[in-house]
Amino acid sequence: MRRPVIFAITGLLLLASFPVFADAAPVTRRDGFLLIWESIDRPAGDTHGHSFTDLAAGERGFGEIAYAEARGLIDEAPSFRPDEPLALPDALVWLFRTRSVADVDEIAVDLLPGLLERYPIASVTGAGSGATVSAENISEEQLLSVMRNLDEHLRDEIHEVSLYSEKFHGKGTAFGETFDMYALTAAHRTFPHNTLVRVTNRDNGKSVTVRINDRGPFVQGRDMDLSLAAFLELAPRSQGVLRNVTFQRLGDANGAGQCAVDTVYQIRITRDVRLQPGVPHILSLGSPMTLHADASFVVRSVTYPDGNRSFLQDWVLPGETFQFVPSVAGTYTFRMGTKEGRARDMTVRVVECKP
Image (cartoon, rainbow, N blue to C red; front, side, top):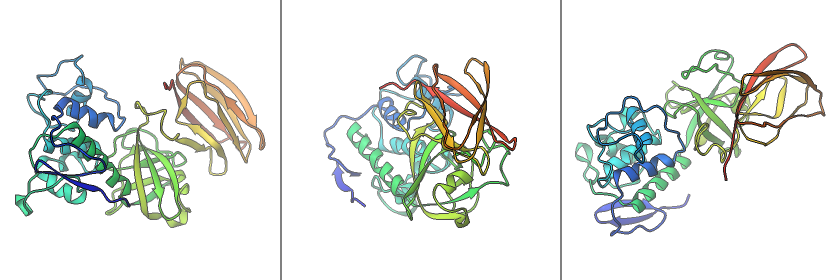
């Protein structure tokens, strides 16, 4: 693993992979938060519940800051002070919370020394209950350095994962979805709903990209529960638990980076009928979706974004392919079936990817 370079800057110790400058102007709180937020490719949604009095709708960053504050990523306060300099402790709290390294209530200024023991991206003064983090203002260069260093730590962090399957198949997830053990999904305690994560088994180099659609696991020491289909991409089912795994967050499945991340596929109609490569959760407008399988399957129907449904009854035999090219953006639902009469709906969201 590459060793970080250590820089001492105006009393603040930062771990960095590129030089930063002591005389750089501090970044504002608004600009600093937006740098952190934009790096996770997570869309801002409903801003109901925010309490800042010095941010108005339509201002730059209002949507992102108000959305984050309403969800506890930024502490409640009468004002956000968007144009004031950003202090290091606030930057670290926002960074740890947006990276979901722990529950939100376990990330606060007075808890930073403990978090920095785990992720040493800034220095701590003192020890024990008297440990503190410098309240100095931070420049944009320093903030980018801290962000990159934390992301390196998170990519190298080793995790333990397990699988969940038949016992939960067809039941509801924590986010109101129906759990499908044949879809490439996973449960995580803190990652936001729809986060895409590349999971890599370091023992054999195999990787799979999963979408977070549930909470868990609830076993001490476990960091993620993978659906059966996702686990099988990494190891045989008989292993049950993998203890040498890394995570890489790729963004939000509905976010700005959706066209730049690995596609997540819905592969299985049943245990014995496996589509190649599968129905993607996200497809670029105008790109073909081509399917084949080692066993016969039928595309019974497709429902278009406007609600119209076409009944196809298009049988695809081994050696044949089915191809569909979307003409408009929106959500399409394909009804897939087998010769035994089993059926499953697979949904693909077609988006217009801009260069």
